[in-house]
Image 1 (cartoon, one colour):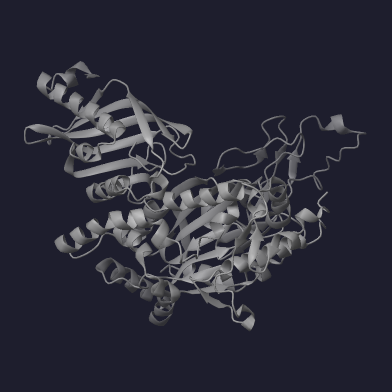
Image 2: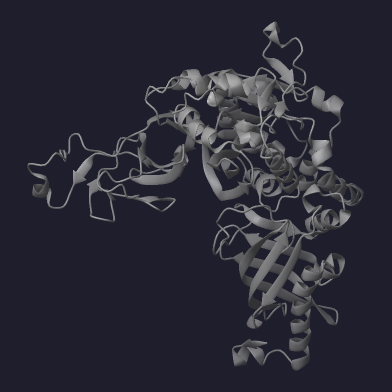
Length: 434
Length: 170
């Protein structure tokens, strides 16, 4: 079906540019869902969302509904949410608790680990081809991995092993857990959902782009300046939302000093541009709690690793120092849903955890003063690439001398985008084995 | 203004008329884009809150669609009126329709009055319209001889759904 050369990765991706069709071709989008999203590991949810056996959380992997369910033995499994009988979706709630999973259509029931428990009128299948043997019939389980509370799943039988896929990018997740005085995180404070009118890759390609903030965010930078002056004059301290918005006003020199590290499988992370520690009483009380919980040396080392954001290709991004989690769901070739969650540091002062809520409201809420200008640009890219093929999208910036073996670059380089397309090409070129 | 007769009896006609006028101006100024005049209807320590889940009680430990004090409201207005927002290059227009104002409570200590009203609003930009609907809850407080809005809470029927950007106050 896809033997057509127009869909080969070689025809679409060069080391430093991609054909506009990668963002606009609906057939290619379906191929991506199959070859990238079913074969890669997708972030599903956090273990704290299903604390007790039978607790479930519903989400999507590669556009299929799945359930993350806590088992009796404490393990977490990820199941397809589709009855083996007529294919009906079993659960529609986002989260809840179940003793058994019961299909609301004809009452087939499944154990929380996916095994078939019972069907009505079982003798109706006697002598038929349908195998309703409870030992073999089940809701398919995805391969899943729980990395320090972050739960990932892979739909396809083939694809990278989890440890290989995660690789060195794990340091951002480690750093988040290590920031908790009690050594644990939990999802708290709700979810924000944003619709973007662009291909999913347009979004991922903006996340370490140091060239856009001063241009794209001129309106919010300008709007925050009077508030910054007023706050400094009146109280001597700048409110957190104003500080966050002013973060986009950095010079190219500052951005040029921000290290971006790329990893295999398309992942990358970027150093933070804010001071790793803030000089105030709330932070001091948090640091004291962290030192009590984790020891002074560990605490200082954890706080010094200042990562602004980290991206785990293709569906997961985190802001470690503000405990922000973003999950990407491609809806169609030109429509993308981003779910945003906040993690609470167990053992940290409430006042400190509340900063993460303020960060979410300021940056990730639909009403953010920052975000609409980003989404406007993503959409303008989308309408541009949809005007026809023949256009090659440039990823050239700071590509010169890249083959020197160094993994390091800065926020002024498009290396992280080139790295994403290396992964894209690898996934898209692999044969359809299963 | 409608509501429980015993509650209504605690406000004199002049107060009811002033509050009604205040709330009518509130949405009218939004629809006309008269943001500085709109903000002047609010008390100095005002809050504008759009919860992210139905019945949300807390905006400190839970995310919100909007949760703004006066400084943040001023910052939003500065962006809306600054003329340099890319996402507002094409005009964004809104029209509200509001239901009857309903007196929901009076704080016996502070004299603060709680008023609710149902609303629908249509927003237009770039050849597309979208609809908002829900409940406004106003906490209106006497300031000198006038009434001012201390808090406006907007409960959208689809508050926990996905959204494209929300740039203007609802």
